[in-house]
Length: 268
Ligand code: HPA
Image (cartoon, rainbow, N blue to C red; front, side, top):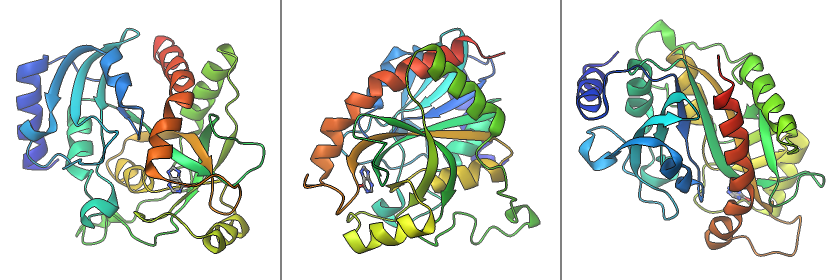
């Protein structure tokens, strides 16, 4: 663990208590309000050196440490995307700190566009796997052999099964699909969306994949859920925009919160 993560852990424990954290949650666009559901202490990213510079509207740049449904969690109210400063490893310190706080797994959430006619705006999608359509990698430059991370079961089968059970118990459809990471910040062209479809992508977004790679590198188990805010470019007449993403994310967010609460309540 890097020196910085150790120092950050000491700082965080001095404010939020030393009890180990069980799980981390990263909140995507329009989902930041979930941080408010946690009974705990909010620490602004600005107080945590190395934490993301998160300046995307619709995100809440605080780390909240506390209890949600009886489980000690660390909630990242915002992430830094590659497109903000060109750093695919922007979440590395935050995830190293999560690991140092004692977490054994991470659940990432995001807003995404759907390529599948049966997955519509307002629906959720559990990531069965992903495609790194950007070609970027947060581990480029990592000097140790640990950089050769196997990605066969990157999206943890047991956590996915538990999330699906939680969704079923809450009567919420949670189809699984493949998420393609596009660098952004411009949205995709219709031709790019057709290409991603041919390659096997079911949804497209500008985040999460670097975090999954980093989490696996750090030995954290991981799963991710997309809130579908729009049909991907060329698949509907609706104009795609960040405003639209922020306006649509709350549709899925309420369902996401019920699934996550159920999941955390039943975590053993
Ligand atoms: N493309 C990329 N990122 C997104 C989209 C999209 O259509 N919708 C929400 N985030």
